Image 1: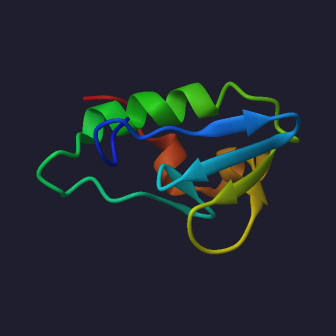
Image 2: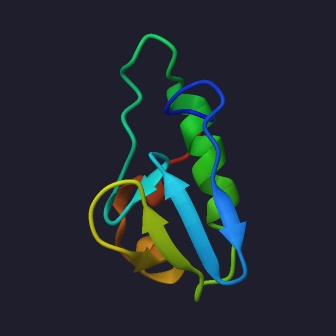
Amino acid sequence: PGHTIGSICFLMDNYLFSGDTLFNMSIGRTDFPNSDYNMMIESLNKLKKLPKDIILYPGHNEKSTIGYEILNNPFLQLKSE
């Protein structure tokens, strides 16, 4: 949740299909009428708890890993308001 109501990610084995929640060095937009910034941060905080070697396949752009995003994605440094 966060990008849109009902947004989901799929974790299968060592692969995370994050849709429009988490991208390589970015996140999904939260400026839509049904988006919620604080819910997005909560979703990202859940993803940060995954093993660092999980391979991230976002809905757009290049693949990554959770570990890389934790270290480099500025949006994973944010906290809920």
